[in-house]
Image 1 (cartoon, rainbow, N blue to C red):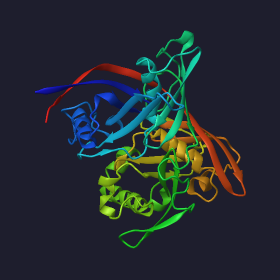
Image 2 (image 1 turned 60 degrees about the vertical axis):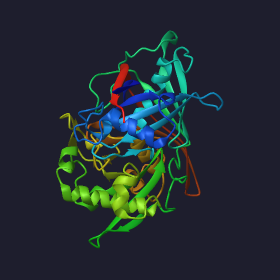
Image 3 (image 1 turned 180 degrees about the vertical axis):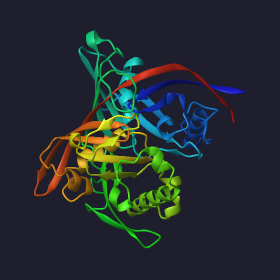
Image 4 (image 1 turned 120 degrees about the horizontal axis):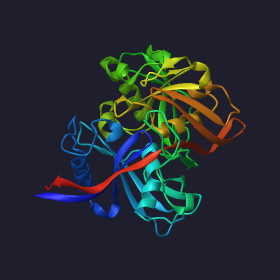
Length: 378
């Protein structure tokens, strides 16, 4: 027998995921996870038996409900479904998937529209933070037509502004989870790795490309083809997770906390060629980022990763701050494998203490399909 599950599929930013109403899923967490794994076709490196796309950026789920009492419109829970393991992680949020939550809310009549734009207040249950989404709705109607393009997505679409309000401590409760702008991790081989761990929108652990013997211009394929490098990056990420108190044993990092903190390789600007064969001049951006996602190289950049990097660039003493070194700028231009992304930071610095009021950026998103998924019953 096959069980019928009503679902929608949306592309949000550079990610794609299954959107599902909270009321459709059972309350029991284990039963809920089993359904999500079956929906995506995990564990299987092809995800051939489900809706997943065989990479972490297309193996995501957004669980949505209307908020009746609090001062926001919808509740949104993000689930990262592992491709090759029977793991569903609710650690942290996905900013790219977040960009489609507002249009899902409009499409499903969870909010009233206005003209010329509709603001949807989204509460992310993973991070317990509010995201204000500003969606163009001329004459009170949602249209997917637009002339805005983002790196990593072909074509143009609707320009959606996402403002992450008071993003500090989204996961750990602290902007600097360890209380330090830098930490030194001792690895298995006795070598040391200097990192900065920052938590804004999502926790990231930053390491300089040059400390890894990298240029900072590597493609995802180059990173993924080096098993020794992948193992080293995961060890650094796991050591940071230990330092944050997320795990006791290093070997548990990929299972118990596979998505956070996100390992992020950063470097000073230099001219490079994107995966789309576009040449980006080093003079046209402030910092280069190569992110990891679920133990593989991200094909572009996580939106929360870009937002956290914007915040980190304002915290004196962190690795991103030292690379960018533009303490008064409210705008940060970040280069990644597929192109660039711009982040706005509203912040205050008093006596070397930084308060991040909000971080914002723009994404495109669209509905792909609405229908019924069929999964095998237990």
